[in-house]
Image (cartoon, rainbow, N blue to C red; front, side, top):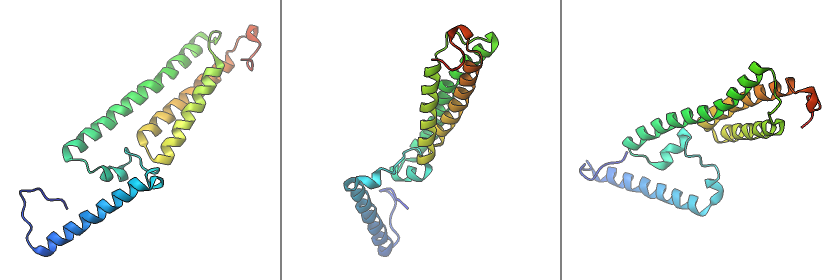
Length: 156
């Protein structure tokens, strides 16, 4: 329990207890700085680590709204794959579509998804899922409608 400068401590034992907990947390943070292995498991967007940042209540509201904004941006970025898949399916042709680019994009999307799961970052997880599904749809439609003149479905 943190107190502002205006609040008074009711008794000396409460003051000593608060000072002791503050000193222990400072030692913990200093040890994290020295031991980079502990910092390797830090993800600023996970709920467990937000307490590490000691955000002011006003900043917590900002962090919540920024998470929502990032979800919107991530979904917007991932949605462009669906637009390309829709064009391929409506034209029933993937003549000018690069198959290797979708393979690379699928690998990147799955890597982001794995990273998000390991770090428990749900904003990246949503983006990774939406992007991966869109890549799979675009990849399957590109392979399905590959023109025979380009060498069939499995040529690059």
